Image (cartoon, rainbow, N blue to C red; front, top):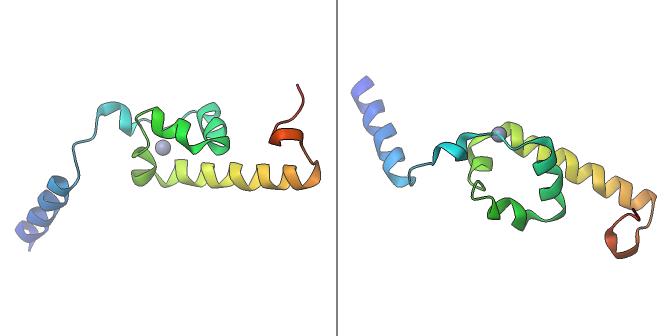
Length: 84
Ligand SMILES: [Zn+2]
């Protein structure tokens, strides 16, 4: 039973390209906020796959997306960016 489970895990490992150590690191709050504006930034960090393994970062990304949506509706912004 256990051996079967281990074999399954090993198969799952093989199907998934090896993760770099940095990909396990959580995004900082700033990174999450930036990436809410432009998801490409997140992919450029080379750690996009982190979201696939981290429900916490995914939750934060959704949280900020919802937050910005609400803000945008409350205050119409020019070019989608607030004036500095
Ligand atoms: Zn994370």
